[in-house]
Image 1 (cartoon, rainbow, N blue to C red):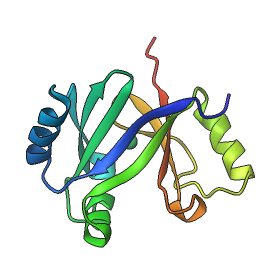
Image 2 (tube, rainbow, N blue to C red):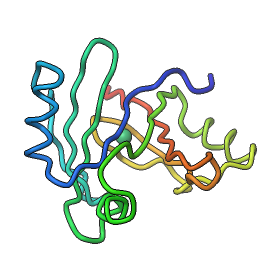
Image 3 (spheres, rainbow, N blue to C red):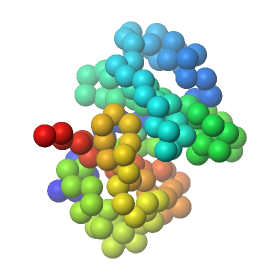
Image 4 (cartoon, rainbow, N blue to C red):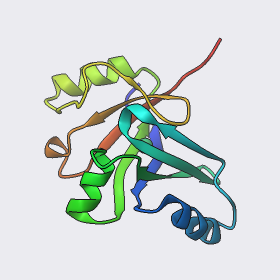
Length: 137
Ligand code: ZN
């Protein structure tokens, strides 16, 4: 199966605490989780409203991709994540289609997901995340 749906939209923020307050006011509810992904240099929080999720991302160190993104573009929409049910198969399909993958293997992402990003150079400037739910047995 190809990309199933938009799983979430990622927004780069420079101050997660302040943005958590802002988005809590916006949604009328608090984030359902906050999580550090040390390997990616980010602290994230997730909001859910209906079927839609928003991920806020703050850099946890100055070399973080989020720090670089904010330096270049400022705060704002950072990526769009699509749910897949077989991330390895989709990575292969998209690589065969000529998209540039940012990793050869799926990585452990936030919110119990395996993730892989597509280089925005190959997707009209939009950073695309593929994510697959980790089903623990
Ligand atoms: Zn994401």
